[in-house]
Length: 535
Image: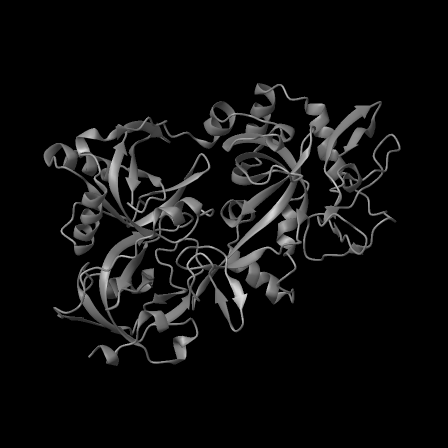
């Protein structure tokens, strides 16, 4: 009978002209209300699974919800046909399928009974892939691990609402690291109650539909508000097999769980102003240890030399490499048939001490731009742009001052910038910037001059050919070509008051032959260079 149904993995966005018929089990049902439509009845969201364990997300819009919601139940098996498909390019993704299904008014739904159909099929992501994952905004995953440490339940109030969470440590018994797992609200209470009422030698935890959670530069997981499922010592074959690995490893009993010291959750203001350690850019670049810090600076350039968007593997989320007529994932050693578009950009950020390259992923960039990676790339291609050119929307970052919370990871001590600086949070809110400047007694005149240097621009420049970009209110770009050694595209420069016509590209030359330390100084209204040391 299975041959009469379409497999979920074969469904594509261009399948609307085909007559598809699927047999699936409903794994999870939840409602989702758009933030901007608080008074509109929420859509009904489903995750369904076929007989081989592949999943896809289904959406039932408001108008059709009443037609199906009384017929659908979690755990039941249905035959579904006459539906539409679309790219799974929305911000919220419960599965890694490239497409999602939309129910229509005339979608046919029939509940069936099939004892041979699997109850649940997990796709566990190992700890090493989670720890090495860099983009916290991705689809949801399944995780299994032995509980090796836990903290106490932390309670706090946010926007007048009481919240609580607990932090756990999970080991997947593969010897490649443990991950931090944060359980919120009822999930935290459920775990503590289970441990109190059912003491045992070990606790094997499964979090189905877990989301990535970046904390102090280290990637972990947490549950979601809508659709995560928590299993504790469940009667699954996967748990029995995992317990065997625990026994073979000789893990200590659960009464020897390590106690995890946890920190309370903070608002954006508390995190950036009162909690995180401030380091100017010069000190970030001088760091010799990994860590997370807060800094302030102005985006002066965008580096397009390494492209901007990439295709990521649906299993491990790493970028794919072209291999003949397909794409290859070096991490999984596979050739995925589907992928997810993501993007990252290198932005050059300056303060009054130095400049550095920050790596900005689409999660934080989208919050500022208000557009997803897929929509951004589609808009660029619609305008006739090519893949290698970064879209004009990214110009919105240039000339803007931000408070950044960054993760610093050491890479090559012999390079010009030995560490990788990854943006974790960013804001251009004036009130937060003002508080930050006041607390750290930062000389605002220097920052104001740096900002005006980027904003008070004229169009006259004879040094560099220009690439005119239309359709954006942000400054136009100078395209650095031919003999230029700096791959960054910088805003046009005018003559700074006092007669100095140096551009930032001249003040911060990333020499191909050596590294340099830079210092800018304001003397009598003229922006000058104190010294440039060549190694």
